[in-house]
Length: 246
Ligand code: GLN
Image (cartoon, rainbow, N blue to C red):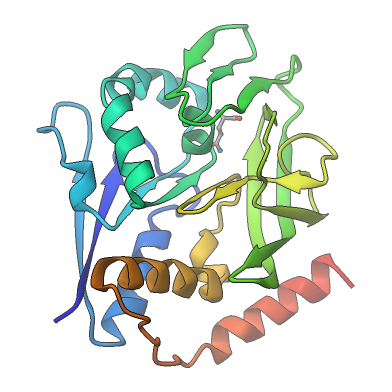
């Protein structure tokens, strides 16, 4: 039986607004089609994981304090994570993790939380603690050569600069910075985004894109995914889109 292996980084520290739901959606959509899904986790104090052994590495959102707790632990794996990125392991990174894969995150008090520096963007919190990019967000992203509306929820003080390859164009909400028209970072096998939601429950086509990518990479063939009944998800999307964009 074909199987995908997912590694969830710091599940006890990075899990905001249902981020774990992303993994549950992947598992559900794999199992519905007769594939199996293994979910492992890694957190501070655990044995070092073999990053290259996984098809998908997921890391969720967390507030400044959580980011500062784990940054040192994460950075010890910098070279290994870089290699996994180069090898094509799929990375899905939400909010706080998005920031930590860049150069650094500077918090509201000016403290620098170092990042993995795998990508050249950097994030700085706005000087006013009360000002945050909060709310629903809709972006248009090119997935598999097709423009698709991606729906989510953002809540970040951090403003991300120097993103050379954004995930999408903002249709509603903020994105990488206040009033920005670009959101997230998307390069080959990495999607890093401010979109909680959880992201994949609101965007099943994106979940399938990740699943197809991973199956094709692992089994070296063009796997056609059996269609699932997404009528409920699509109804929900229609309502949300009606609300936020018209
Ligand atoms: N600490 C970050 C910020 O506020 C990340 C927040 C999050 O993960 N939701 O910008």
